[in-house]
Amino acid sequence: MIYNNAVLQSTNKVDKQCFAKVMDLCLITEEYIENNLRGTRKFPTFECHTICRAIALHIQELKVIDGHYMGVSRRRRKDKVDAWLQHCDHSWLITPSGSIIDPYPVGCFVANAMLVVTRGKYKHFGGGLYWSDKEMTKKVCTEELSERVQVLSNIISEALGANVN
Image (cartoon, rainbow, N blue to C red; front, side, top):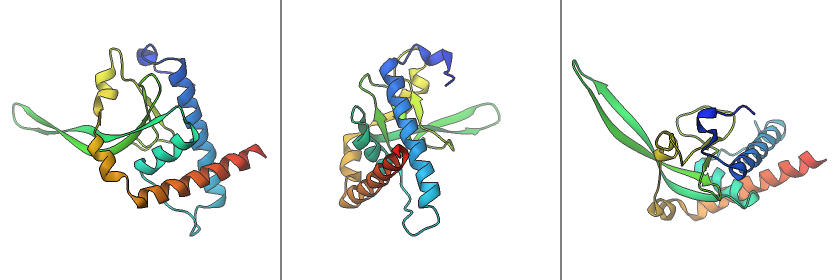
């Protein structure tokens, strides 16, 4: 893997190991879904709240955090730019040392999760965009979410079992 050298110092070995586990799990699961479920009635869709919780069931050193992802809106006028913060509800994973792994990054079309720094020179451009909020956990933790997490966790287990053979 090629790392961004500017943020390499802001992560540690455990962060990178957790990130590699998430990437492997996601790639194995995606391949399993493509080969076995996509296009069938068995293929559900999932959002960040479900994905993070299902991954955390399989990679137990990771913790789920609920909150908001921050974004900036702006409007240019003749001689100045107006800017204001906006946010959306979001969930992500946190490593034992506090780095963020986002398997469902907001506003991005990526094939893998992202490892986001929360320390060092670039923390404001990474982890600073994530804002934890315990009220969000109360809002999203419903019986329906639990059911979706169990469905995805089962799919992940099937994918991991199929990958062993």
